[in-house]
Image 1 (tube, rainbow, N blue to C red):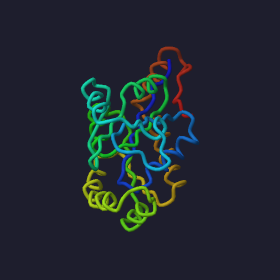
Image 2: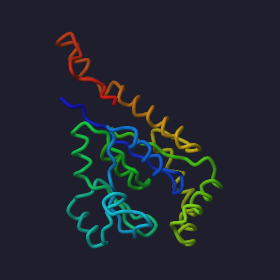
Image 3: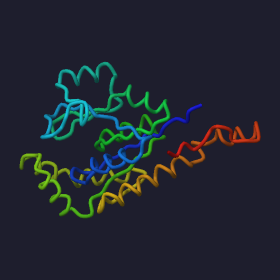
Length: 213
């Protein structure tokens, strides 16, 4: 029997480095799968449809909502974002861990439906550093940047609803902390009752493992 994968939800204010951290996690952990979000916003320079996001029209997005195709969805900065349900469930059932990089609105909706998920909030080392990262990114207009910075305090207030807080002062260190979180989560008793049952029944834990890959 394949052990069910873990749903890992990563959030944080714009500029905290969520995307970079997730890319590094995926490149070094083959058991991790990334769930691409659907969005109605326009692609930024260098973004590819189907790789970075599923870029859809507002009409298509509304259809996805009506057909219950989304695990969660939210309106952020005037655009809609959502997580396609089918891909996530398929990968978890295959034993892969799935990473969702989503905003706090969507994360709380996922938490209601999937309380067994692991919720990680990424903090910047300082608000000045956060603003500097957003400006240096060079992908948003000044109006969009101003809007994002105005929303920071409200987003930070949601951090208390997450299981773990990771400060992204250096990406390698932040990635290492999240990898440690994943290992610890796989060792939790609630995820390994089958090992105990097998030991009672057969005298061995059998082929079931903690699936730390």
